Length: 193
Picture 1 (tube, rainbow, N blue to C red):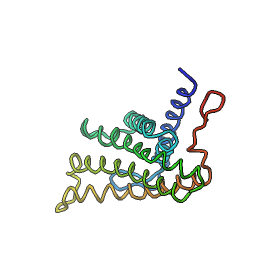
Picture 2: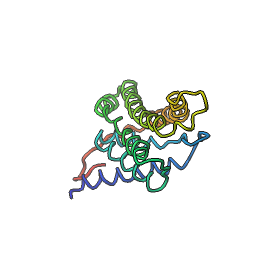
Picture 3: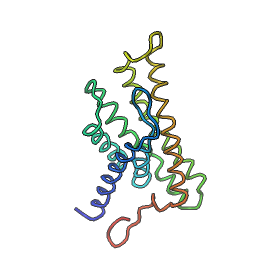
Picture 4: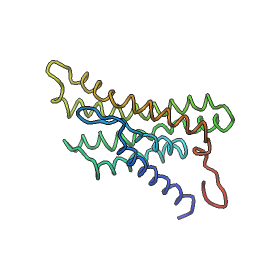
């Protein structure tokens, strides 16, 4: 195994572990679960640093760690949606990696940050969609009497996903704007920095 591949694998593992730590630092929690935290930040960071593939892998690893340490189990498909699909989907933020890097590294920070926010929105939207579907399919019994299940799932998941997206995107924007090297992978002496 070459050094560059080893560094990539270590970055993926460290960002997934950091996401688990950030997930345990809860800003606030919804009454029936779902919390606002910076769990998405490390996934977004690796997606913009390394690209969509590594973002997806990091999100997948986070989903597996969530299953091992924090799973709330109703049905196997619910676990797949709420953990694997939801957290892997965050890595789709990486579809804007080249646009973010190109603009940030060329001194066009406003445009780079716009692409970064678009990517964070895409990743968050995929995570939200997975939780929304799981809410409709598996948690409909929690909907108050007379409330449509889809409306309940929409409101419930938006309650924590919208603030999580805003906080994570804001933190990521500040991080990239003030320290653009966090998303720049350079080769030096045979390994990546």
